Length: 74
Length: 208
Image (cartoon, rainbow over all chains, first blue to last red; front, side, top):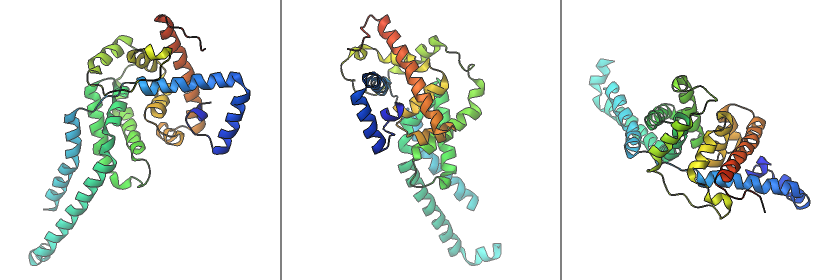
């Protein structure tokens, strides 16, 4: 079931899965529930932005590194 | 060596120039491939450490290490997955020792943490209208945090970060079959939790 929700089925497996869903109500309900749960997590989990200070530190990381290499070369 | 250096100072300079040009190229590529994932890494670090300062340290350490070993990053593969793996390893090595016992959930701590950082949150698009729609973000967050770590982790990596099973299996160092079953069981637990919340707030949990 998870495999289907996450789009990890092969094309053939997916066809068979959909065929089964059309015939089996139990699985259809479970499939809808599982899909809903995944959607809730996606939509409702709050995403935070990295603090600007952290971003600029990371951007400078590589520059500092270059300076050090140059210093050792000199 | 010193002799030849003084004899050919021009050559020495051009070598240095070549080196810094390579370095510059590496920097640019690093920023394009790796630094773009900083928000995802920060979120992952927050979930792991439950502490903004620790999360910053963890992300910084991760990028330091990633930059140092950037040459060993296999071009064309998922750089985000590579960074997550480094972050996870860093976390295990330097943070987990000090953290709370696994399996114990401190709800007050989680709640405090959630509220302390909520203000900086980015916009979220609203889900389609059903009874879960009325559930607050906080409840979903708490439900996810209350899951055992092995379940929470795969759900996070799959549903929030969008990694493939193969990438997740590599990150958590378990077979794909294990990832699959953890996802299945984790979601079942989560769903039960969310229904509890829904009941608590008086919503109808029957699927119509």
